[in-house]
Amino acid sequence: MSDIVLNGKLIAFEGIDTSGKTTQARRLVTRLRESGYSVVSTVEPGGTVIGEAARAIVLSKPGEHSALLPFSELLLFMISRAQNTYEVIRPALQAGMTVVVSRYRMSSEAYQGYGRGIDLEFIQSLNEHATDGLRPDVTFLIDISAETAVQRKTTEHDRIEIEAVDFHRRVRQGFLELVAADPHAVVIDGDRTPDEIAKDVARHLQL
Ligand code: TYD
Image 1 (spheres, rainbow, N blue to C red):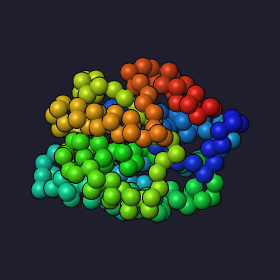
Image 2 (image 1 turned 90 degrees about the horizontal axis):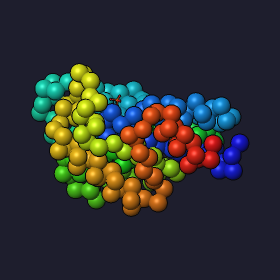
Image 3 (image 1 turned 60 degrees about the vertical axis):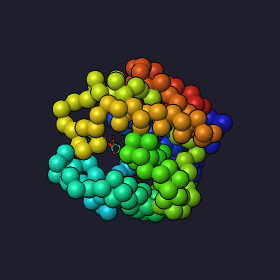
Image 4 (image 1 turned 120 degrees about the vertical axis):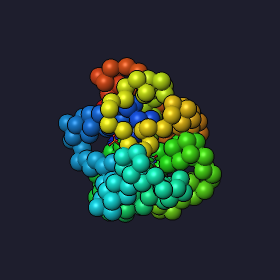
């Protein structure tokens, strides 16, 4: 095992849609297990029964829940986060496991703050309550341009993915600003092969 001890640590992956963060989160889980760690992996929104119910609304097909207000969308992400933190993440960390989460607090700040224009301090305050103050020990931002994201898009779109390229540009810019202000977060260039990116992530964790 490496010098950095990852037992009881929370590692988060962030990035705009199609950045490849889910692939990288999966690859890191495999790598950690090979290194002897007990790992729990989870996603947001989702991860719990209540979180999945919130996910079904916020990531519904365009037009299905067109009445959903940005404020209500924000709260649904917070419901998912509160449940996931309380039911899955905290217990695993307390048991000394390493937790890998695909999206956490920073996603709400980037998407609902920079993307939808909701007050950032308000979101940060909700995040603090939803997580009971829990912050990732390491956050990896898998960074790609909004233009690359649009090119990578497949045919299946949910109500957030169909937002215009300007929205995704604001979200990406938000992520970069949030990472710059967070000493526990690093930017990983996502415009490379999955192998190269995975190596970069592992190097940061001294795996
Ligand atoms: P994503 O994590 O990419 O999951 P999948 O790969 O299964 O589609 O999708 C989640 C979407 O929800 C993505 O568009 C970002 C958005 N999102 C927010 O807007 N705010 C949040 O707080 C979270 C967690 C996600």
